[in-house]
Image 1 (tube, rainbow, N blue to C red):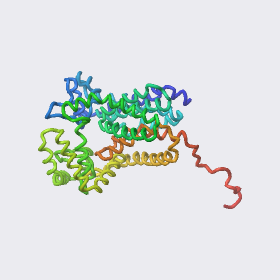
Image 2 (cartoon, rainbow, N blue to C red):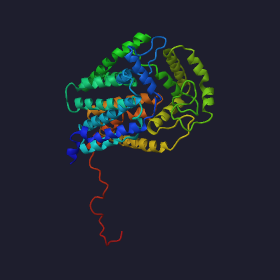
Image 3 (cartoon, rainbow, N blue to C red):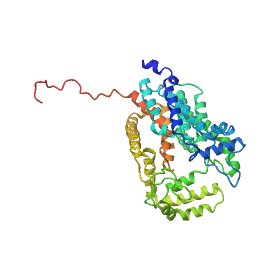
Image 4 (cartoon, rainbow, N blue to C red):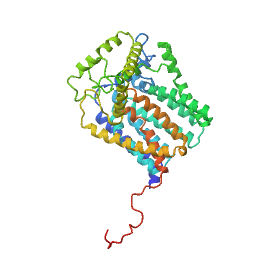
Amino acid sequence: MLTKLTRNPFLTFLPFLLYYVYIILHNRQHGMHGDELRYINFADHLIHGFYSPPWPFVNLWNGPGYPLILTPFAWWHISPLYQALMNAPFLYLAVVFLYRSLCLVCKPAIALTLCVLLAIYPNALAMLALVYTETFTTLLVSMFIYTTLMYYVAGKKNYDLIAGLIFGYLVLTKIIFGYVIIICTIVLAFAFVWKKRAVYAKSIKIFGIAFVITLPYLFYTWHITGRLFYWGNSGGMSLYWMSTPYDDEYGDWKVPDLSNTQYPRSYKSAEADSLLKVHHAKDMAFIKKQTNYIAQDDRYKELAIQNIKQHPVKFIKNCINNISRMLFNFPYSYSFQDAGIGRSIVIGSSIVWAGIIAIIISLLNWRSIAFGIKFLLFATAIYLLLSTVLSAYPRQLDVVVPVLFVWFGYLAQRLNRVNIKFKGSSGLSENQPA
């Protein structure tokens, strides 16, 4: 019965596609909200033949990967509701590709269980009605997992090329992955020189292909900024807020006008705006003296590095708070907590404990773990490490949950059967006193 049910994952998970459509139609609010306006504006730029406004108004807050997906909607002036509806097939396909990936490393029963968990993952469902990059990014991550395992585990040729193409587009969608390419390639190059193993060269090839995909964008950013390997101007502000030295601030991102109006929007501390101005008004005035976003990004980085050097212990505390936000969605500066934190604690704790168990098992069996799994874990670890030093939310972790599920499934398949029942008789008859 299970074999018939899971033979075609496109049919198996089809009910979830319909469920996702319902969630979007039910939860979508009128108009555009938060980051949506920025993505849609970039899509509108693309249909008019440019991405960023010219110097000195250059704006490279995010890469062009997601705006490219939105260009048909911008061209035809289609409602944001229908743009949000694209998230339904994105998440559905992410689940399908995760299932196909898991079937390469574990039994269908394990694969089905983990895919259902992703299909009903509350954080993923919460993002469906928003025209944000996270659902599309989750799809790209699932596709990258599948093509990587097809190459390393199934031994299929040319899948390294496809994996590189997908990761390249992932970089264009989430520019932080550009730094993942650079760091991973450097580490793998040293590993190859040291150990002379072909698998390291193959991994470098995948990242090399991904980097080639990003070259047109990097050439464009060099052309309008005069800077090589310039991915975007959003990192400085995020690093600045992560470096805050004040005890009542936890490294979460705030808007430049210091009004404390961003997420989470409810339960604000009444004195938040005044405290933000006391702490940061001087820095913001220094930054706003610069007339363009690129120079402002430089000033943010300059102040952030200064804060980190002067208050290294506080920066470490902020990084720990950042990890807590990715896992549990708290703490936030000048914000009271709400009842939703309980759900976040359950979700985050499940990931933490499963991760701890998986780490222990992996370390005990490291030499026996397939290189394809190690490769995925390595890239994910670098991404999470980078996310830890920049202001993050749960969605920064959520996009790589498919990698964690593949890891869990791979280990579960290879563990000996766990039995919580006593072995044999206790040695006492029913009539004997204990």
